[in-house]
Length: 227
Length: 227
DNA sequence: CAAAGGAATATTGAATTCATAATTACTTTT
DNA sequence: AAAAGTAATTATGAATTCAATATTCCTTTG
Image 1 (tube, rainbow over the protein chains, first blue to last red):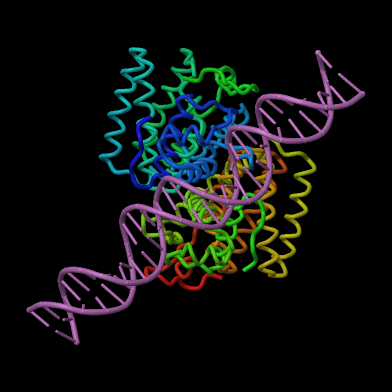
Image 2: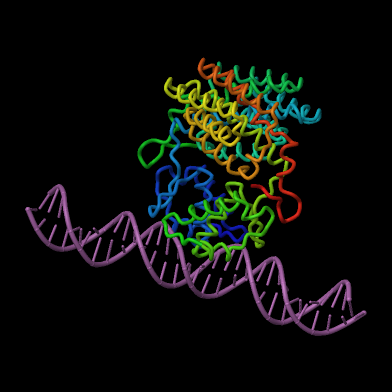
């Protein structure tokens, strides 16, 4: 309901629609009413429609000519494809990071790594996820490849809705931690090939069909809960 | 000058502006005049501005608030980053292709491969490039990953301007052909790890700084020729 | 009562209009 | 004549208006 009065209106609107999608206020398959969103954001249809076109390009919504916009339905295949792609990108980020990363940056990641282990020992799932994400983001940042970061960020956006709803079994979790031990070792040796390989195969980058079955968008217009 | 009268106007306009960029009619750094393009395409500013926003999202142009749009300047780093990324994507496409490709599809690629060798023997550069591209596209298609294909296509678009202006030295060319021999063998064995590795390291995916120095966008507004 | 047809309504697509910021051209001053 | 300041012009940003396509709701017909 808060009125937007910033410059780059279309980008602002696009971001806010993105938030609505992420938080499940706009459901997959459901028609997106331009009028409704205009009123909600307090803008005219011009910047709103620009935002819709941008979001369609980013792959978050799809535009049906003369029949409005709707949130993209995340099929199992779609999510699997995205995971595969993100794994490849993470692999590349690891390879490049080894070439460019400074000792200080490695030390910072080592810090994060140890913190994460602490959270694992305490079985603090949410803090674990948080620090885990920070580690991967740090490696990505160290890759020194802007295009890579942009692409990864876009893919991340697309599946945010379903990503962190994974359930962690004990076996799964301990394997993920082992992967991270190996990652850390490879990074400290600056072994780009090895780190690349580990990240490409890293458990978190491999989709677990079973764990996702429950959060994938269903056939009918109303999606299941996806918090 | 041909008037556009199709539906999905903004997409049509975006594609045509993309063509103008590719063919060097719009130069990097140069300000893009909305009025001029509107007159050229015979459309109003509304769909044109939508197209500009989409092209900015696709990374072909950049929008400066209140100061218009301009074609993205391809720096050496930018192109290198894109190449690295595309190499990783090709690697993934190879891995996935090995899992999904049919015997018939392999046979088709073998055909292309042999044709390409013929062009190499005759030193027919352009036909060689053409068939070479077809091979890579076939593998990409066989990967059965739509998200991957979409992203590859976007990256490809971004650097089309400078991509096929590479000069081929004899040494470079013969190595590229050797790579292809190995690719073909890995594919026929459906050795996903091997094919992935080969494609990631494939010569054509590694930027040759020297060969690109001449075609990269320069500092001044007028770019060098890029045909 | 179900299905088909057709007006009424609502929604989208695109042009136009209005407001505001940037650029250019023209003075004025030193 | 060069620099600075100011008016005129132009370009961009966003709202509004107009046109065309879908959708809804009601009537008609079998």
